[in-house]
Image (tube, rainbow, N blue to C red; front, side, top):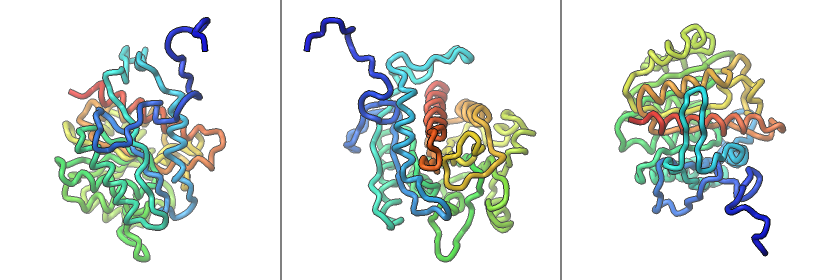
Length: 317
């Protein structure tokens, strides 16, 4: 084909090419990771207690993220007068951890393996769920690292110890995290409404030293007030359940809970957190795209993650 009439290079619009996260290069050889940040899909939703479908979350988030594939110039923010995600921030997409249907133990082990490979390579792991149980292997993978403070954005406390023999479902991850010696503390933000957990769950969480803040309490405190309750100059692992947001902007999730966060509340908290200490791990879970045919939930997840990754590397000392 003649090049006559074509500009050099590719325009590479969002709907063209492979739908990796933000159209970044894939890296399927997990022994050859050379990046600052890696994306790992964890399409596991066997831990759900109500509506399944989060197994399709990683694909939907990747597809939505192509809208925000900025190219080589990065993303200029006129409010901050800063360019985030320049080409110097190297991001690769590891693909997905292998999921063995109905087998939580093997599936979680495969997710943990992927996160460990990212940490061994010195990269920031960003995991796309999947239901919130995928946080359990993610946090477990940090057991040979320096201690981490867990920051949870969620409608639900997720602090159940055991229910009918189930210890690793999506109602258990914060309890499993609190039991880890390498988790130094928990900040649980956005917790609200009926069905979050029984009174005993709150008592157990507080006995482990967890700081539990509802959306209304957060709004009373303000972003700076909330940040002031999180240990400064610490290592943060951030787990974001999409149902922490109000279902008016994030309907595509299995357990929606009204009265949730709006976009800028969480964005400003994450930006402040990236300045307050060192974000060393991220997961975003419970996007179930089949409950949202508009796709706005997936766009929210992708946009939030890309901005957060940008803040993290911009503010790293």
